[in-house]
Length: 419
Ligand code: UD1
Image (cartoon, rainbow, N blue to C red):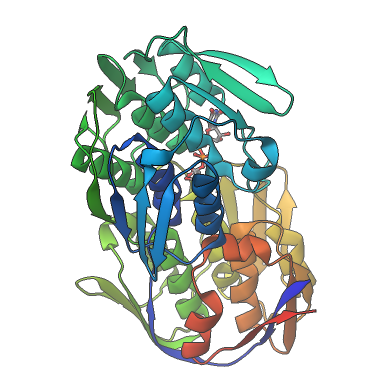
């Protein structure tokens, strides 16, 4: 079993660089299946979700070469082989293989996706879009089969009932080589959607409107190789900014696109966090007398659900009462009992999290129940007096590139131990 052990209460300072965006790269890699030549990605984070996707790509016949943050994928040898449940269920984003295999072969047999337990996470919108594009869906054990009658999939007019990042990207991937025009209405507007559209367009696709709520895709017959820089991870950036505000004595978070974090930064300013926005970095000063605020998540450009858990430890340092309402994943509250175990006055009341501060946390044995809850526990451990032991750290390593090294360089007493 692997654990993270933190001796908290140490003031941190220095610089920490944000890696490439997890939620982009987990879509970019499957999208490369559509190319008929080598595609190179730069800025690929060292996270286990990327390792899993590479394993899957290799098992399908792709040639993959990874050198530091550069990933070269030759998808020409990819075969239309079934991808059973076991390989696929470790990550939610495996659903992007539905779109890319359907786009390339007109069929896909893929296990059902896994991922963090944030309550119900249906994929009905993805399937509705694929059906509108001519695919029929059937189930084979724990796998799903998407197929057409030998015809390539075709364009369609799709209205998303709910704003969904995954369904928007998946439809875009499938539509890139579909016959005719696809229109996605009520599309999600997250920066990762623009990043995937940029890669596909640089491969020769015709996608307009990514980043707005109407995306139009004119299908093309072939897509070629290209080279692409992954955008910085705004969630990792937000995590380090919250950590810097909680325990920093002056920390510069670099490789940040401020525009991707506006609602988050506005919320931190409301708390009284002192920051200086620089060209592609944010300097966070040491803080005192922060004010409790309430947080409500919503689709981009609103406050990201993925930052709700990482900001929680910082909220706990503030004076007063506040609430967190997650309108995307109401059940995303697994970090709350762990924070309470560390001595925080925080609880779940109905469909909200309520807290009362300021709190001085104490080290404890806690469990990372999902990726962003794990990030919250790392920050809480750095804030706490004494020793914190975090188990289930596989979740954290799925999404935070070199987290131990990055925090150690800032002066943290943090170790990953194997028992
Ligand atoms: C993505 C992110 C995840 C983030 C989430 C919301 C990836 C790999 N993961 O997840 O980190 O927390 O966006 O920003 O990019 N929904 C349906 N039917 C569907 C699809 C979604 O009802 O077919 C609902 C979901 O239950 C949720 C909402 O739509 O309430 C938004 O989910 P969605 O944006 O699709 O999340 P993911 O793409 O899975």
